[in-house]
Image (cartoon, rainbow, N blue to C red; front, top):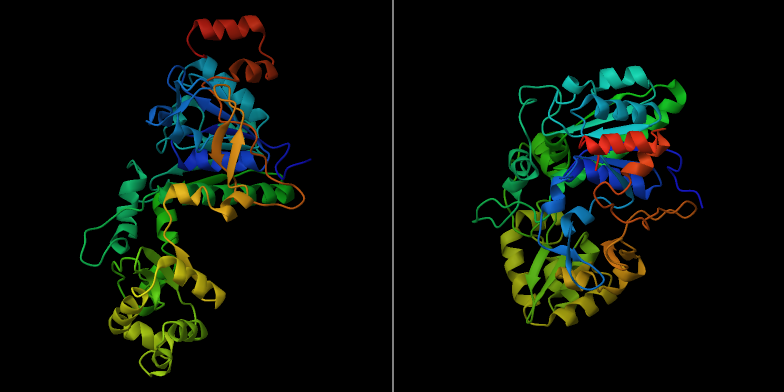
Amino acid sequence: MSSPLSGYKVLDMSRVLAGPWAGQTLADLGADVIKVERPGEGDDTRKWGPPFLADNEGNPTSESAYYLCTNRGKRSLTLDITSPEGQAVIKKLVAESDVLLENYKVGGLKKYGLDYASLSAINPRLVYCSITGFGHTGPYQKRAGYDFMIQGMGGLMSITGEPEGGPLKVGVAVTDIFTGLYATIAIQGALLERQRSGLGQHIDMALLDSQVAMLANQASNYLVGDIVPGRLGNAHPNIVPYQAFATSDGFIILAVGNNKQFASFCELAGRPELAEQAEYATNQARVHNREALCAQVTALVAQHSESYWLEELTARGVPCGPVNSIDKVMADPQVLARDMRTRVKHPYNDSLELVGSPMKLSRTPVTTEQPPPLLGEHSEEILAELGYSEAEIGELRAKGLVD
């Protein structure tokens, strides 16, 4: 069965997370993604552990869990791009590729003749996506950028955490992941436009840009209302009650989105009159009287167990949910039913478990059967496809340019 991007070739020269996340997403959609890595070392994340994958006998391998989460579906080619021979290989690959992904520093590939201007002369149809901390323009363009620091610079940490606490980063590198997803969208848009124009183009993705964009309603609250958002813990700046509350034996998320849902909660809690009081009858009023209302909701929720609230609120159509640890997430029947926990056959382990793809296409489903590649696993195969003979490949290996 054909996948959405079957027949497209992607040259993934990125590393760590944002670029590889885009590459993996494109691979899930069926593209042939070739991951170019440094001989002997590979992507930095290969060493970011523990934990590391255990083989069939339970012995640890060199494959880190971090690397495995973002490189599914690719083929690995080790190549020294600082050498003329390595640059020649890249240029041969570019001639038959649709997309190139890279996250070198601004201008970092120009000295090797692998920048967009140089490679688009070889293949004018090439979609060349650069991912950097701050983009190719502006006063910060030469700076290095990392997810943690961009979460701080881009405002996310100023709205994450308890009101009286210090700034906190999100527990996942969301700036990298959002940038990878925005890059994927931009790449697909450029490929669609190419059908009309016949030309590729340069895509300039910046972590800071993505972080600012994903501030969403919080940024709009400032731009429209001149309100500088602060930390609200688990609360929502625009909706009340919409946060985590302690039950008698745990926590629940109560996510009241409209007045009817609030009235249903109040009736279940034995306080139907709250929904009729002027200071709580509308969401606008509840936001203005957040502190007083949430104090009452806190007392009410604490009277019953987590299971009671989840069952009764769900039955009444009031949005709610548990605060699950990751082991519970991975055992959740809905998560399992949606194939969000999947197994692939890896060279070291016949049953490697990975998180599945959230993209569910009815006619051209995504492909997640190909495991993250070993370092240089496909070097010989890819070079042979380019027309290199066994002797030429052996010579490249002898020079240390290819593993």
